[in-house]
Length: 128
Length: 128
DNA sequence: TAAATTGTATTATTTCTGTAATACAATAAT
DNA sequence: ATTATTGTATTACAGAAATAATACAATTTA
Image (cartoon, rainbow over all chains, first blue to last red; front, top):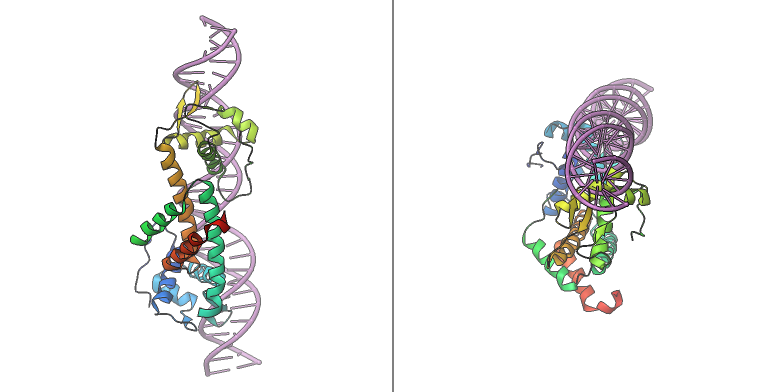
């Protein structure tokens, strides 16, 4: 697990890279719902990071609903297809409505927006 | 002009808010090519900002090609034909990038987003 | 030309973010 | 029950970004 390395010279913060890594593990199926994540200190040692940096990644993932932390016990992947997905869909849709409103008020058309998503689905979005 | 207020508690930096404000003035047509912008100190006074903050906004807008600065004289709206459209496109794209980032971090896929757009473009009238 | 008005440059200060050091608290293992 | 393991909280540090204070330079205006 976590064969990809952390890029210490990247402008993308370490904890963000780690979050992305873990999400990819989940999306790819290498991490399933209920799986335990490595303990903070252990993963920190493996990736040569400060434990707090790993903790921050785990904590953020928990806020986003992908992980459940239990003090003294560990961190667990928490990805309930049904309930969580519908919750996220709602949140995504709210985000989209906000975007749509702003875009339309800027004078964009739905076609403009379609073209955007088309363009972005061709080449993987980059991180900043 | 500039009836919208600056939000000092926003995480978006003041000069960025100001840039956005001015771009909106241009897109809406309240500011046309050749119009003079308020002098740095004057706008700073109106919005209760430090003059350097206004200067930074003007300077950035000049770098982006929407404003021309003349020392001792003032700042002027400056866009050629077609430039307005590209400004609009750029702003819509910025909004889109922000939305995309949030949506993906929520666990949405590009297909989810495509479906969203499709759904909204099918019954357009409901969403003004 | 003199004074006022305007943008520019330099430097300092503050704020924010990411990272780190360390101590604390809950759970599990024995 | 005691110890080891685990996550959490607090605080501090460093670098970057945003904002501010001040002095400078060009243009306009009288």
